[in-house]
Length: 165
Image (tube, rainbow, N blue to C red; front, side, top):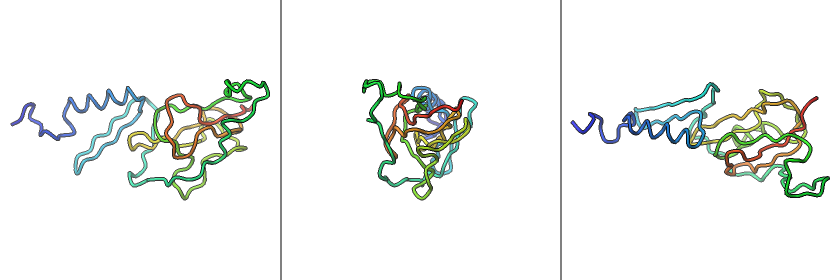
């Protein structure tokens, strides 16, 4: 027997699982699902359910949908685009931003669409897990601030929304 009784490539090795949990915390991931042959490990933290898509999902790069990140502001201060009218929906994690579920599907939302708190506005893929991002507010999408298929950072603005009153 090897040290600990686990084969060297055992994905259920306690040290390996602890490292995965550390990575989840470090990158603010809610779910991790790994499979190696017949072995599978799925880790979740937090109360929000996440949707996992087949690993074969590979969206093709598409031209960026309306991304007015350099839109002129009425105050004349280009250094503060978040101050423009509306509230910003930010990325809850580091990953890749997608406007639709797959390349053949229409975008979840586009400029002018009305959203509610439960409306899915995009997907952020992190470590092969496709996380649906809800609007968490009611209002109208006034700008798409991230580019489809591009990496996003934690806290990066994704959409601008004019809240409903």
